[in-house]
Image (cartoon, rainbow, N blue to C red):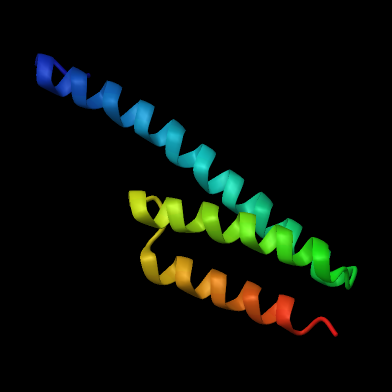
Amino acid sequence: MAHTQSAKKRIRQTIARTAVNRSVISRVRTLRKKVAAAVESKDKEAAVVAYNTFASAIDKAAKKGTVPANRAANYKSKAAKAVASIA
């Protein structure tokens, strides 16, 4: 267990930051699944709306450093390609 005040504070900060990061990552995963579901159902309008929401969330997560920038770019690229494949 931590003894110094600074170590105790770091523990508190880590717990808080971890909770926020988990929430953000969970939201991104959910939105990614919604895009996939819309593409699967071949609903172009729903897929575009879902993609825009997903792209916004993943960009914010990358900006904060929760998700690496290249991973965010890969996720967006794959999702955009899937949405574009709907006839």
